[in-house]
Length: 322
Image (cartoon, rainbow, N blue to C red):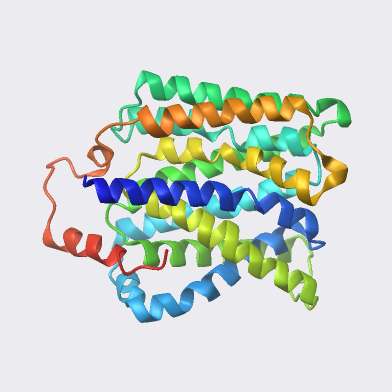
């Protein structure tokens, strides 16, 4: 892989880590039901991506989807919908630190699947880095356990939401070897939004939102944690193993804690939060700088050859919305 591609992937991960840290802050500011928050966030994301899809010819890529592509898109879309829905609901039932550790537990799951099924060898140093980063999230979570009573249902929802996030990253890693960025994210986000609106209807939530405050929040969620967050991660998935992307998401509770310090002064983090944040940053540094080799090897076809259509799709990524 060219150095330029590697640098762009790392830059995308850094931008994503900063951007997704805002998600919990925006959710705290919203007064809408959980499924409505997630559904509108993804719907507005598709709306913002629409001009780029038209200008870059992204809809032609969607029309070229074959059966395998559709299965991967469906898998990613359903996994993302469950991840958002379950995670946001869990925040209303259990403590935020508890939810954070359970919903970000996916690096262990993703690393195992990447190693044994995707043929992307997880180096020992990467496994060590994942454990360091995950231990930091545990410290962050345990630091606030005395602030309230856990809800078993909320804990379970957060854990399952974390597994869904892992499935989302794993299916995205496979899909992005062939499908260019724009058609992939537009299809996945749109499909997830549909599932979430259905879930909101079943839950009895009002689908129509008229509050300008909520609409502006949904737009900001679409722009920052979705386009600059999830879309950047999906961009990097083409060249970076899924377990590296999954581990990078552990930066979210650290970034959120820093933002809380400035934006929610009544929830200022204590010393244990900073200790846990330091461990997460150390673990991320180990994984992102020494944690993988030959990033594209695991995602290529067994023959190691790439046909002309795949090379053309590589070129399309330069024109896709990022």
